[in-house]
Length: 135
Image (cartoon, rainbow, N blue to C red; front, side, top):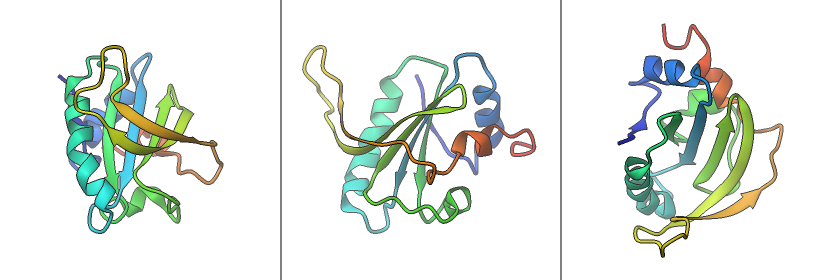
């Protein structure tokens, strides 16, 4: 069973996992203090994470306010924003529209609105895999 990690509490585990062959980083950016959609989707995101088996995927939920240090000046146009890296390369950017707790057989539980990959996005892989980050 996989759990959602927090960079403040799980820095060393995150850095170690990102250093493994085939590592992936899946980050949801939200703002639970004021985003109603984020408030409803975060528990479903954590449930989805718990049902996933691939040990090479590191799941994070970052709050715009609690984790602002990692995001710099970046503010997404829509929330929650889903970012997926594979071996250090940003592969996917999408707005997380919904998560179906009981999807139809063969269907994906998450409904995404794909966005283009932009240079404005924070390089969270670099931040979380840096050697001194977990020290």
